[in-house]
Length: 206
Ligand SMILES: [Ca+2]
Ligand SMILES: [Ca+2]
Image (cartoon, rainbow, N blue to C red; front, top):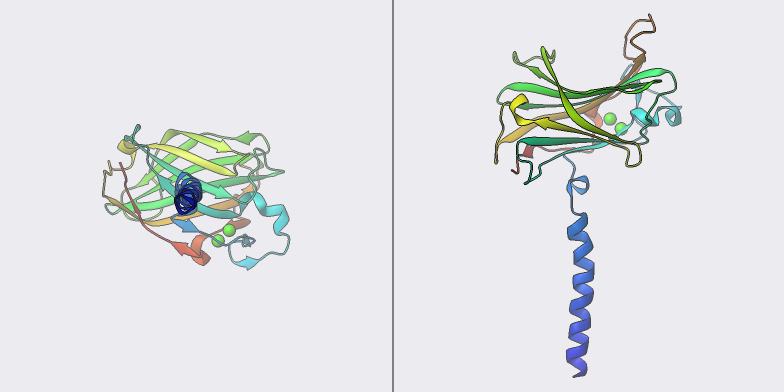
């Protein structure tokens, strides 16, 4: 009897240990890109000591996901060290790029001192990284979770379906003078994925 009780207790403990893991084992724990933090660089090249002022441009990770109940959409999430709804003076640009069927795609949203703008999906059809055609999409700018999620209609990204693989996943952020400042729109600061801890391809789930 005692052994039976102990066995039941052990099994219950195992279930309690495994359950939260299963619930939590979302894509955030296995992101396609895991970047380093404190690595926003001046002009994207030079290390910059005042990283606390650049938390809202510092990429932590990026992951893709699907929703079985919404299979016509791809979800693209970018996690930032400390996302801010409004910037303190600069234009922040948040992007995630990938390749599918030799076309490049990019999700984009801007934030500036007035707040964040519309969510967009861009496409390049000639293999370079200039995106000729743009469409609006739904999205979510979640300051509490420090995440931005684009809800991308698959019809805008070449209709990838279950088992197709998205490659060359590349999140990047840019800080510039604001679009209406009249100042040159150079990238003053960037976080790029060349120093990421890991970059994986994504297989479409649904
Ligand atoms: Ca980073
Ligand atoms: Ca980086």
